[in-house]
Amino acid sequence: GAGVSQSPSNKVTEKGKDVELRCDPISGHTALYWYRQSLGQGLEFLIYFQGNSAPDKSGLPSDRFSAERTGGSVSTLTIQRTQQEDSAVYLCASSLVPSQNIQYFGAGTRLSVL
Amino acid sequence: AQSVTQLDSQVPVFEEAPVELRCNYSSSVSVYLFWYVQYPNQGLQLLLKYLSGSTLVESINGFEAEFNKSQTSFHLRKPSVHISDTAEYFCAVSGLTGGGNKLTFGTGTQLKVEL
Image (cartoon, rainbow over all chains, first blue to last red; front, side):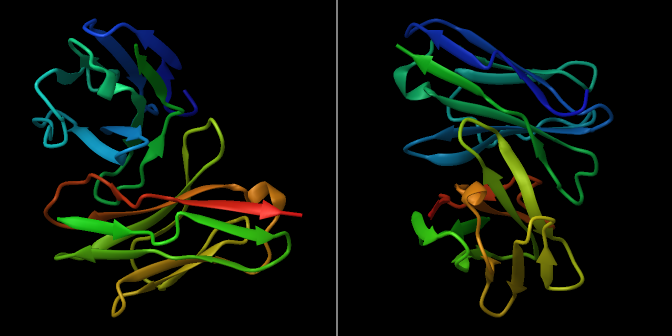
């Protein structure tokens, strides 16, 4: 596609439920990133995938958070047993050449945990 | 590790006036520097970047930023703002080596252009 696509655009869930957020990067981009944007914490890095290398998970806030990238393209961020503090906008970005790190962002998924 | 400081959380300015949004960074390694803009209810859009070469970089809509290594700054400027420039602006940094390729963002500056 022309840009990074994320779905759903909005997600409302109940505390304790699991959620899956999807990201379709720009075609041909080998690097994919997840960030979280929240009022209290600003923009935070979560996880980074580059080709077939092991992902950099250093930003994941707890073991309730996980992500995978299938076939080097689509990525899914999963949050298990959601908590109210997980409410945020989850942004995905992709990059063609990670060494230059020009990241292009999707519109995000707004997650609300009730 | 890197960090970014945007001292001004909000900057009100009248249309056609000049504006400067400040950004300072801290890093133990050489860095790439970026400004992203976020319009209401939209994702982040890359405004301009410094990778190497000329320390003055420009965007297509009249913004410019200058990399100052000695002052560890990357301030964003525009000589004459428009109502359509109202948005939140984020400064970001990534290390060339170490720290991976993740972007570290500042807390953002809300630019509000008034008539």
